[in-house]
Image (cartoon, rainbow, N blue to C red):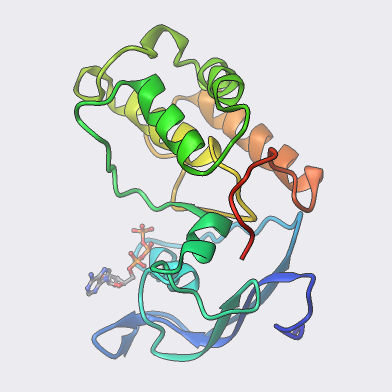
Length: 200
Ligand SMILES: Nc1ncnc2c1ncn2[C@@H]1O[C@H](COP(=O)(O)OP(=O)(O)OP(=O)(O)O)[C@@H](O)[C@H]1O
């Protein structure tokens, strides 16, 4: 197991125990992820995959240690939020913002200097161009899913966490998403766009 204080390690867990109300849902987990590495967690329903969101501070650990960029994960911390992009299937949208407005808000909010260009690229990549001026309620469930994925991809990040990102996507879009995630991994450390967002 890598030393969590090793600068190369972005995410480190040691004997991390996760669960609810003190009840563990799976055996303790240890892992170390460096920039450019991609980890897919697979397993049967109910075996604790989503509960591993504890790694990014969405739940309190029951035991063990977890660090993200060398610190305890804390979503209230601005630096942590700047570094970690997570799409955890919450389906949260602003009902009064169009598809393009969602993406621009995210991109500008995270300090992207070329927000319009990035947003146009994502609309094309996720086949949402025709829907750029559409409100969320008028999207199909798969289109809304693509909007949520585009939102998390429209911002700079050091760590990307997706919970069941393939949900509700058609076969073609699943393939494209797989290609995108593979390319992100291969792009390696600090692959994202220039931004003014301060580093943690
Ligand atoms: N909010 C909660 N409170 C209490 N128990 C929960 C809660 N959410 C999930 N669980 C339980 O924790 C266990 C693990 O759930 P989790 O959602 O992590 O599984 P999963 O591996 O992601 O499953 P799936 O493949 O079905 O999405 C399950 O037994 C589930 O019933």
